[in-house]
Length: 101
Image 1 (tube, rainbow, N blue to C red):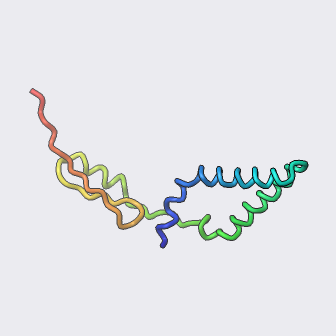
Image 2: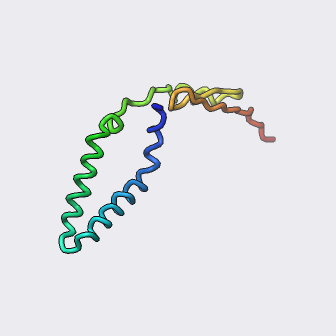
């Protein structure tokens, strides 16, 4: 379940659209005071942030020593390069360079 929140950055724009629609609906209820919609939606955002602090503060991902793994790709052969989230690997086949005549 720890990997569930790793991709939440891909939902940034839909979240903005969602909260804008919520603001729009609340503003339509009381057209005389649209600032109330801003206050209510802001309070809702603060409430959501306060209740989800564990998801807003996450430890840094593990350093997979990318530079060391990539430097070995200069020579031909098969290489396994690990990346985050932990347990994921990329198999890279490097072919020998053809000499030009």
